[in-house]
Figure 1 (cartoon, one colour):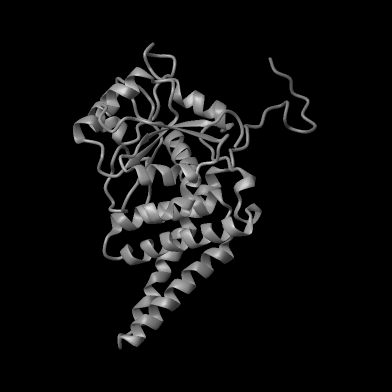
Figure 2: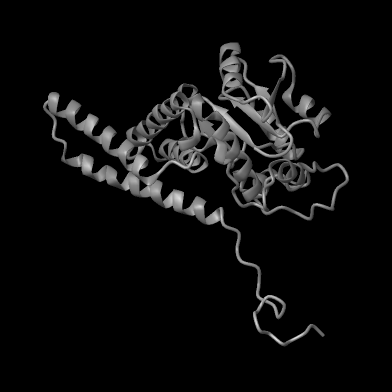
Length: 294
């Protein structure tokens, strides 16, 4: 990841969880700073607005009144929520959810959290109301408001992002990882995809968070289509064998092809966003043009 390391503020109350997260964030690319569990996170963030680039948030630790204060004061950050995928929003609608048994994907989830945050224009202004911020309102004029964070420009500068378009680090592509890391990441992705399948028809909100988690890591790790289909088929085969042993029918498992199609559609959208649009044609860019600007 180019540029300066991202500073991640940790709102993780469980020491074991905080330690595990730290193990999956590479030194030089990320720096974690923990907030005292007894401290007011709003006060801490408001006192050091230029110090943090993203937040790791343990599910359930942020009180509703603290969330409201962060929104009203324009103190939102790219966020990865660690905890069970329930479909609930903890901070804002650009957050990324990651279960604690899938921390191998943490660095990819942080990339996705930053990209989603920039794309949705959340750090717009402390003057925005909660409904506007929570709904991903378009960013306001960045030159207005002397107290406003310069988070968007800071993130773009540190990460080398081109506008809101996704930028990936080839060093963390699945094929470029050491064998052990590659196998761990594939196992983690399989667990995420299993969460997606288990909730796909019975809990759409949870399924959507699991789908986004899988697609985010698949995109930023450059998971191949072949690997994606293989993960899907292996899980479906496993479900079929278990159901047959228990004497159940398995025909309905064909319906889960919809989940695979959903994943592919979301991946296509991320790849589309990874390619900036061509600049408009002008006389200077059209070969053979003899026109000159007035």
